[in-house]
Length: 167
Image 1: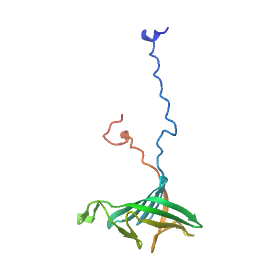
Image 2: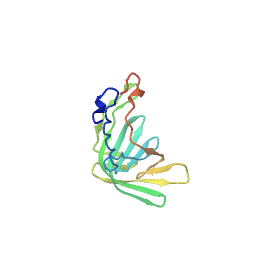
Image 3: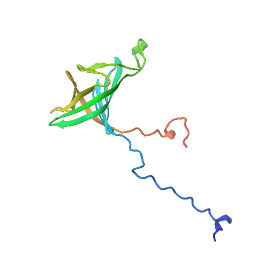
Image 4: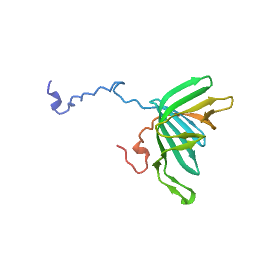
């Protein structure tokens, strides 16, 4: 019966199924939380990345990328100390294409009375109040923000894209 699978009507022996990778081998996706307002956004990721964005419809978005140094909670205030690694201006096209700015890294950016420069350590605060939402505060200004969980984007399902055949 050793070679029975070679005879007509018998199925080939099953292929060995590889063992699933252990949790230690699988890469861990980074997750975090964002606190957004119409003009500012603070993203804090569990791997220590911090992104503070200054955004407005009438000018390009400025993203201040950094690495978390310290995160502490004292009463109703949560403080994020981070070292600025990069300041990036996104590509921007004004209304009616009157002005077009290309993307570029910036040497410094001022936001809420606070100057941000790569290599420097800065602080931002989240303050809980009786009002709905939280306050994201810099040196001289605060904005009311709402928390939102951040999860990594899954690759798109090709069958969901019109005109693209699935695997």
